[in-house]
Amino acid sequence: MRKIAGNDELMTTREAGEALGVAVRTVQLWVESGVLPAWRTAGGHRRIARSAVEKLMAERTRVIDGHASEHKPSAPAALKLLVVEDDPDLLRLFTLVVEGWDFPVQLSTANNGFDGLVRIGQLQPDMVVTDLNMPGMDGFQMVRSLKKAGSGFANLAVIAVTALSKGDIQDRGGLPAGVAVFQKPVPFQEIEALARDLHRKRRPLPA
Image (cartoon, rainbow, N blue to C red; front, side):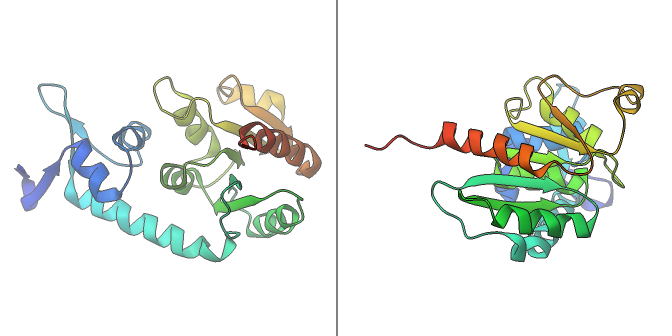
């Protein structure tokens, strides 16, 4: 590996992916969204400082450890649902409501867009429910990164739940096509219906 100032090592996206345990495309998504700082060589190749990869590894470990108790036991047919929300009381309410659904769900949570992208790259969820107004990286940035062409997550089911009005959302650049938007208070019945339909569609047919 090449060295940069401060004796830091440069890594390729493939090397970073191997270190982080994710696909190269996930590393590229993190780079493009600013989660993982990188730059391009004269030949157009991405290079990432090892210190940045190690920092992200530590951050990912913190996020996973911090939310480990919020996961329902994994089941082969469980729908993987990620909720991104900075209000801890609302996250607890989501957990209680989802536990009452009559189909298997593996629930994970994150409290801002940065954590959300880390969790998405790690867990590959089937559905993401996200707030839009959050500290740090907000829901707008996260959703736009996910829905960018070539992201690898363009077909991910994304639901935005927000206190912002339609006008407020448009004033902030709007949201990509295909993102369902609901106003707070959280419409749990509508979200359950969408999750149930997605679970039904992805459930393998009996042999």
